[in-house]
Image 1 (cartoon, rainbow, N blue to C red):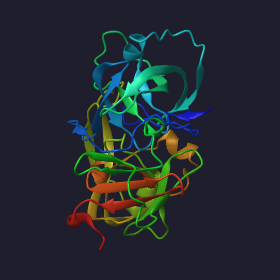
Image 2 (image 1 turned 180 degrees about the horizontal axis):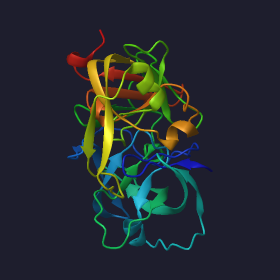
Image 3 (image 1 turned 60 degrees about the vertical axis):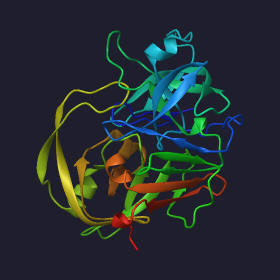
Image 4 (image 1 turned 60 degrees about the horizontal axis):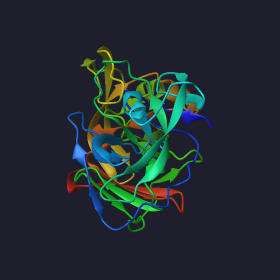
Length: 298
């Protein structure tokens, strides 16, 4: 198995994962909102907790900070590991089966998770990332504005994107000055939306520099200067913006997706906070709609 793992900004994994059938599907799950804008879901591990996990639409595999995994028997012996593709690089990561992970009163299940190394004494903003392998429902919806996860949701009313062969949510966007569709990876694990350089060249020039601090991922990041791009008349599924500012980044994930020479972006929580997503695993499709009239394309 080869995995995509986006630490700091986000996390995801490649490779379809068997869904635990033990989760009940009977009520909505209320989520918390982190200062970074991420949605957090309190989980229990082997009856302990709660631990705050980021709900990550870009992750088919859940992840856990090493300090948390060690409390349940994880030892770094590199017995079970694989190659992991991060936003900016590729590296080896270990795996550990988290025992009896549960949330919102649902029956717990063992979840084989990517282990994120965290140096001893380093603060842990969140304990992990909850991926699609921990959402045991063929259909689910996330209302980012309300902070609500609905399992066993109604079918999408329209198809705005596809679940690709490795479990990621892929769609396209249109915007002023771009004359072909822009590839989009829908990623609630990323606090900000990020444009690749072909999109920067197609849509306009750099507008300003942004001093960006650490993001509420698992590992934390140093501050760095990042350029930003302002785009106009953005339409992504049923979500529309008259103007939208995103970060610019020559990220390795774009090359991994085969988008290095084509306009593409990571759609993060700065945009998704206004959206509702309905995922239908049975058809391999999803709907991306505006959660409020203000950003509704209609």
